[in-house]
Length: 438
Image (tube, rainbow, N blue to C red; front, side, top):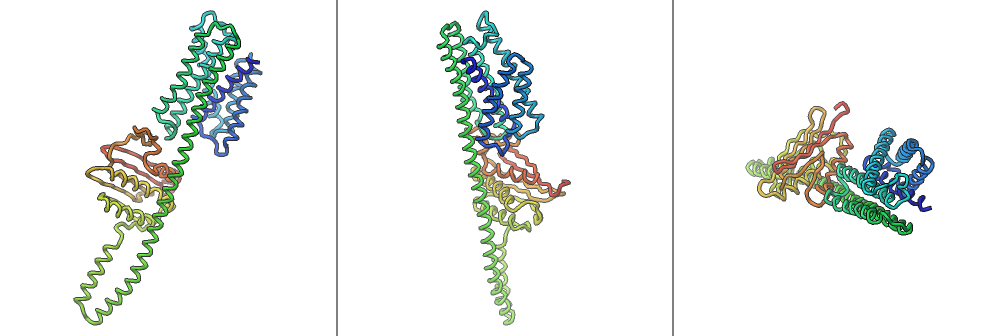
């Protein structure tokens, strides 16, 4: 009975490591929820246990069956091609076989006259298997860490180092138990020690999933904050447009009065007063007109609003634009891209001492749309593979409001982007194709 429980506990550890391993390589299918994922976890454990029981004495068949089980289950869970799942399953099996050989070598080194056939019947052998699965857990967790880092989420390196302390301590503790109690004769004590070792490994896994759940909730909160920021920017832009339309109505009404006054002065031949009056009107109209005109109402509203904000904050705004009347980008996405880029640039300039400059290029050239923003920055950021890294304890996805929303909009229209930071300047450039051939 205990041998069956021992095998079941090993299967559970292998399945959990297998799930973490595939999560590091492939993304989950959107249709799979937590209930479905837990159901497949149970099926996974039962299938592994069944394969181990049926093909216990047939090594090759057992290996092939486990690869098949992994591939089939992950086919329903992960969003990937079948052959990639099979290759990943084979690689996972190779890792486990390599760890098996390393563990056997370790056991032979520590314990003399050890029989490999008794590995499941002795405390040292069973604890050796637990150590092996803990090493497997460390390997798949390191893969998960690298995967999360590329995606800009999960624990940062310093937090991973703190977490890795737990599995390393577990390995040392179990290894000490195996050496100290290698000659134990009481099976009850042996079973208790094995249960403690197994519980320590499970505690590591529990802590990992607990931290992972907390991080996922933080990501959800950040996404909601980003969506709220995006919504607020859109509301501000639409309010600005509404105010601009109201001012135009007022100016249209005033313009009628101006025409009547000009007509009256002209009929009375009061040319000096007429000239003075026209000069005053011309000056007031010049002061009220927009500084930037791209023939696009949304872009005009955003750029002129940000232009006035920069002037108030003492930021020099240098821009180069042309006719943007016909763009294949929805107004909502224009608001997201322009507002976030310019807001981030203004926030960075406000932290600078001395020169504060924002340079923008927004032009259509040869069937492509170019949008680039360069601004002075209080320091040089670390850019790696298109991601902003920071030495602070905050994750990189928290650096720069709305960067993730900008990237989503870029992907939506098949665009590409480049991020650079050098000599206290930050540079964000985007290229959108204006037609399919481009």
